[in-house]
Every structure is written in C-alpha cells, then in structure tokens.
Image 1 (cartoon, rainbow over the protein chains, first blue to last red):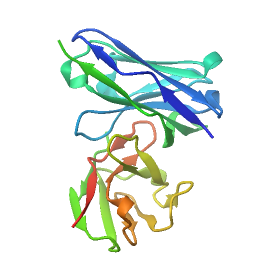
Image 2 (cartoon, rainbow over the protein chains, first blue to last red; image 1 turned 60 degrees about the vertical axis):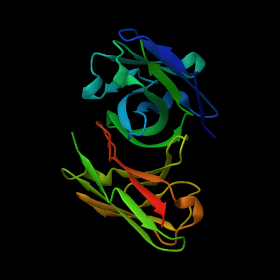
Image 3 (cartoon, each protein chain N blue to C red; image 1 turned 120 degrees about the vertical axis):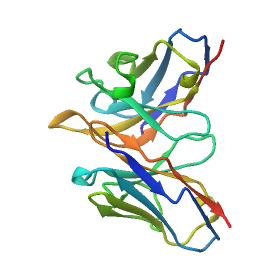
Image 4 (cartoon, rainbow over the protein chains, first blue to last red; image 1 turned 90 degrees about the vertical axis):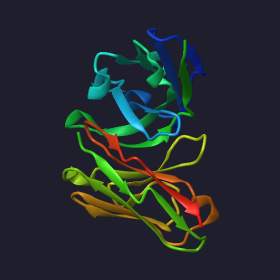
Length: 125
Length: 107
C-alpha cells in the first residue's frame, strides 16, 4: 500500500521560498503522478501542479505558473514542491497526492487516491 | 478553467437520513472525470468516488455518485455519525479544480 510522508511545518518570511518534500513508500513512485494541493485556513482545496517522475514531465496550474517548481528524485522516491516569492496569502496546508494518469496525455491526471499528511506553511514577517 | 459550484453550502440532517449533494460544472466534464472527497478536520481528503460513479477502495456502499456532463451528485443513503464532514467535488484531467465544499452537519 502506497504511503506518502511529507516534511515538517515551515515558517517563512514574505518574499522568501519554501520547499516541501513528499516521500513515497510501498508503491510504484516512478510511474505514478504526484500532485500538490493546498488549503488555506478555513478554505477549500486548490490544485497547484503535478509531476510524473518516470518522465519528469510537469503540469502547473495557471495561478502558480512561474512561482512553483515541482521536481522528483526517483532514487529516493521523493517529490518536492518549491514555492517562491511567498506572501501572507500562501499560508496554508500543502498536501501531496498520488494518482494514475492518461497514457495518451502526460498532463492528464486521474483522481487522487493517496494523500500525504499535509505540511503547514506559515508566511509571516 | 472549469468552475465547480457545490450546493448547498451546508446540509443539516439527522443520522439515518438521506443526503444529496450537488456539483455543477461551468462546462461539460469529459469522460466523467469527476471525483468526490470527504475531509475530516485536520486530516487530508479521502477519495470516495471517481469516474462520477465508481466507489474507491474500502468506501461503504451507502455512498453513491451519479451524473454526467455538467450536473453531478453524491448521495449518502443513510447518514452514519462519522459521515458528518465536509465533501468536495473535483474535476480532474489536465487542469484539475475543486468545488468550494459542502458541509454536512448534524441537525
């Protein structure tokens, strides 16, 4: 059974960057798609982007283009999400999640069936 | 971007009652790329339904999904105490988006 374990909570200053990790175990990391979803306090869910580690192909939400970078290290079965130019509105819980994907379109991800435990990122001066 | 609108925002029901949650899309969702998730406070979402009507592994059969095109629904046939949570619909594919959520609360 696939498990995703994320790195610990972060406190960052406005204008800085944060990098969150997501380590997979018990599954086929390279052939999965790993997405990042965030949830601001008391708010809903927002998809940020994803990666298929086997190909290194990424797909980013338009709202985060240019500010988010998602990479994957197959040797350690770990995905990373880096968000730059942080502002207070980026305060949120950040989740990684696994899904399968469309073999005819590497940006076409299916439903997310395994989730990490979440990482709280607080942006404050 | 496909916008998903969930209704109602809050649903007040008693244990044992039937719950019907709605999710309407701003444009047709291809291949029924529609999922439902349940979220408990302080926890990650849990996948309930994918492909509009298929239950995920381990999900009780009191949960069912239906719909196509732009109108979808999640039905909980008889509410158990552990079902009083927040539910999100999601359209997936190359630009996934989520609805704003429906909270099912005890009346």
